[in-house]
Image (cartoon, rainbow, N blue to C red):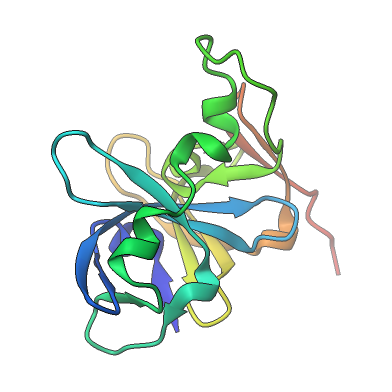
Length: 174
């Protein structure tokens, strides 16, 4: 099923033994367009904790919530956000750790990137059965929403963090 990354944000996540928190982001590989992690906020105010959950733990369900095959205790032991940071966190000046994967992207950060000559990325459509990026939604409006179009992942040549741009391949003419 295709779901908007924006609509997934804030969705409750449910462990085998009860509610555990909510989804705050999706991390994906910009080469394969596969979702590598769902970022779960455990819902505790102090200390706030976000963990990385592999999509392979997601159990299909039709109630709108995201169910996982792990218990709350197992989810608490999942890797923390800093253990595999996406590109935008790798450029944080305060980081002194080894660089991370240069292809791991945050859906929340990528939305808003400019698409030269077309507009900006407004949303990302995710196939929640395969946990892959199905398409990028581009909006050509400047101040107000404009016409929306879709870009297939194969047509995105690069996601440039410094320029905050999604660079597309030249269109082929038939």
